[in-house]
Length: 384
Length: 90
Image 1 (cartoon, rainbow over the protein chains, first blue to last red):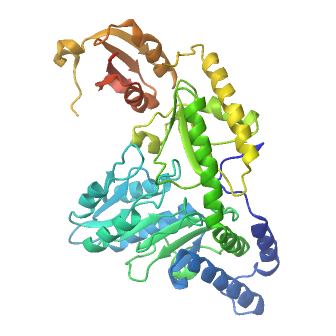
Image 2 (tube, each protein chain N blue to C red; image 1 turned 90 degrees about the vertical axis):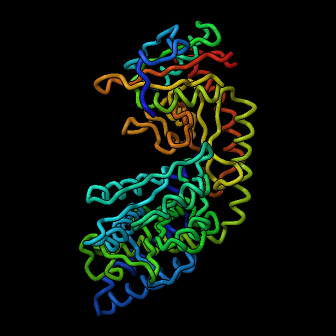
Image 3 (tube, each protein chain N blue to C red; image 1 turned 90 degrees about the horizontal axis):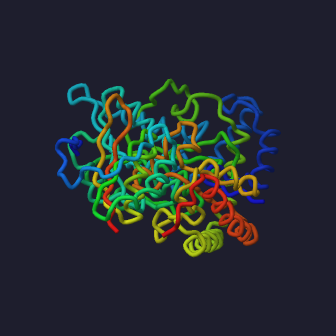
């Protein structure tokens, strides 16, 4: 039995659980009030902000906690676009990669409804943007924002954010980076203008996002934000969850290097064994520039939903980008942008402390499941 | 890309076999293509009719993987899906 869906949510660490319980005792009061309970909450919130900012390599006053990673993305993107609209020169133009998380594409689509133009830059078969195409796109007139993820959440491909950040700087375009897939897993790139991340991806509780807006960046809250979180985020902050997320991130980041080695070893075992043991199976992404814990593949001639269900029955929890496995009934836009096979798709994303035994069990179970499903499709297309 | 109309096709692209996978969900259109491409001669073209959104990605991706020649696709009327043309290469 093994949970292999860390890219959706890393299991909450014991440190996070303890900090959450302590936070319920000490962090329930309103941090903007002047009484002692409020002052205690305010102190704890400031400490959490300092701790997370240190790991993200930004100033504490540049960092706001949000209710989710998606909220952080929405506020960052729409706030940057809104602040750079011009009455005389029009609403401007956003450049995004085709493989951004759906929250980024949705925020861009929202801006588009208010007249902002959106250019989507494609990726190669490995899921990586082409630096020259992205650079050409940001060099045009009236570009108000560029969006490029640190790494892709579905196939793990790491994007050339530092190269694009340099180009953005030269062109005077702010760069938003969605770092949700890689915070606490890889060294973060430097030099971005805005960043979003999500606590449940690093072993924190659900319901905590992080938005960083560098001091030099023009940004205006796109919704009524009140006075909390530096006038950037509406609503009463979930302080117990924030304290838990901060503790979880410190623990997660402290083990980054050893986890990188251990998880990379396991994902490369899976990659190698898929090649030898499974006919008509394609591994996606670029093994040289990939997050340590994600491995995504497609098995030809199989229904992705059935594959996820059968693996679940065998005790392995994975996710899938196949159309049939998604509530939209659309294939993953990431796989489509890569020109990859979208059916029979499985994303394995290993949580910390994944054991060799559980990976062995997965590799032992998968070929039989694939064979059985290919048979039950009534087809058993002969492998060439 | 400008969609190719059957009348504009070079004669070599006129399909020797049409597979109707309309209404079939992924992966069935690909399974049907893989099973039946052997029915045409090498160099001949198979047409696959499909309206599952995954087919739009998966037909060209399958061709790339299996080294068959993906000729292109045309949109069927009334959002009815696509006609994909694939030339058997071996």
